[in-house]
Length: 327
Image (cartoon, rainbow, N blue to C red; front, side, top):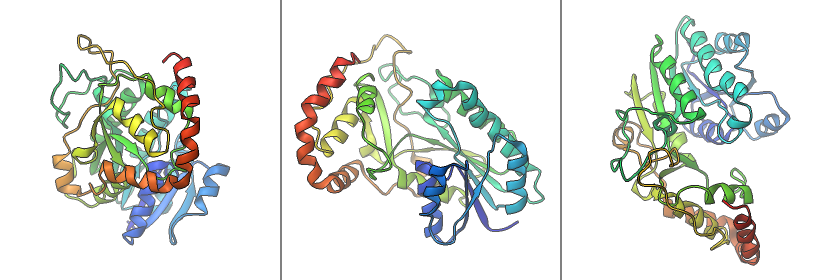
């Protein structure tokens, strides 16, 4: 076994940050993802010493070759199809989210020196959460109740990892956010989606840099066989209606979102798949929470800079667009 960490889905939002975090720690890293023009362009910006390997993990031979060639000490499995693309092609999403995970686990378990397997999961496994009937944050012991495709895929993948012979750690992520304006482009579609969610739905955000720190730590931490909940400190415990409005204001678009609608306190199904999370154990073993929500907003304001001022001029037009969509 080498001392290499293999990161799948390495050119996505979380993957890119995780590769950077590992490289900054002096770890040997192999970054793998699909061979696309976009990913090859991103590979040009990899930290020195990080190797890129192209593989389609839905092809068993690719996964087996990757494990055989690299003999990793640990695998951080981030490759996934996430919402909203998951709903456009559910068959492909299942191949990536479930079948490819099983293939990678099997290839890792068959290695002469099986690696530690760190599986990325999501708070979506808990399904829609009515905060009026479920006042406490979710924990690792909260019974999963996925109510849509993504949560179902993640729970099924978790189960396969947990029943394998590998040393494993599962990280269930909250709402991942980046202060990098290029990494998370701002769009009117995003505003429309935001406006459709119950304003009193609870959501627990987290800086992608803290997520990356958690994944890097999980490859060596004394946490084998644990499910850990990854979200920010208490400043990241928010209501859905406050997230979009504060982000929009930080980019110079105050008031761009029309007033949203509250959820139905008498229904368990009319809510989004997010909630506040108990991160006590995860913080204890991974020590990953370093960026508060106010600090993130300050960074976004600074990065937006002078563009915030002309953005205010288009805010009324953007608000009118979102309102016309009838969310």
